[in-house]
Length: 91
Image 1 (cartoon, one colour):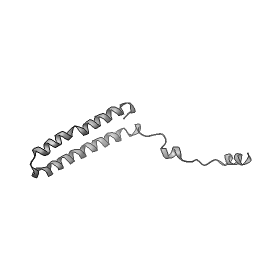
Image 2: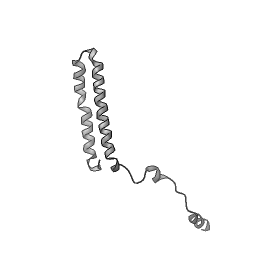
Image 3: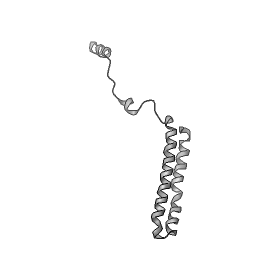
Image 4: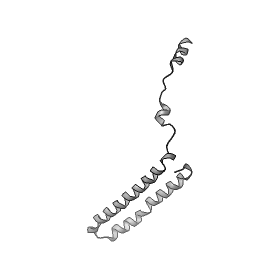
């Protein structure tokens, strides 16, 4: 996902996470206690499907998130060349 639309995608994600909370409370209050295990199973299956779709979407846009160098490569100490060592010893 391009950086220009990251904020919009993040806010939509947050809204999609928060909106079902009142609905979940209403479902739990409306169903009898013996039906709650089936409700939890159904909700967990729906959540697993949503997570799979979200991860698939991230996988499709992974190229826009990859940096040309990893942080480990950017901070790794480089070995000086023999010519550099010789010049430094001569100085």
